[in-house]
Length: 217
Image (cartoon, rainbow, N blue to C red; front, top):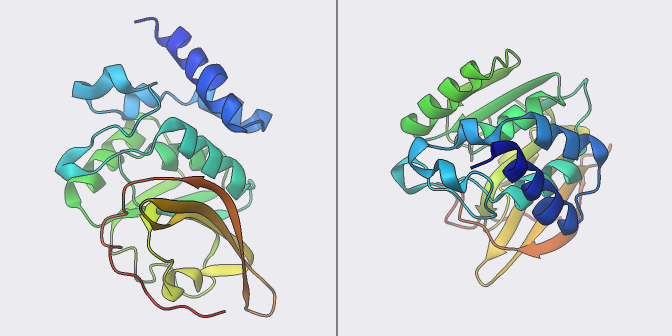
């Protein structure tokens, strides 16, 4: 397989047509080697628009969905970012190239090890990987400028939203099959949240987020 041709095709034939038009995001996807974050047994699927299997029955998000969520989050160089669902570490690697610092967490030790090893090999010093329950606060109140939940949830827990700074954003996929939507939450200066539906999609449930939680605007 011609790796660079496959990467080019992924970007130009899959990702760009899915309304990912931010040049910085497209350049980043060309620079960060996705194949280095895919388990060896599934390396042939690195550039296919599908969820790649990971240890313990988990999956990487499809490339188009990763790219679209990254674009919608609009991470800036001075920002601190939390990712819930470390997976293989690929989304954290993308975020690390755009943010000041990234904390990525997972509740499965095997995935924490996988993400840690992959990110270390990639030479990214501004990413920390931690074993933690993503439904609970990990950085204190108003600790992060941006949060991404790398998987679907029935509803975003209030405790997760509370970790956003004023003006902070959270993106994820919300709902239950067969109807899910990518959504963007933004914390306002008065502590309230706005929620915008971005597009319809489907994704595997984020581990540990099976039960909906109550949150009222």
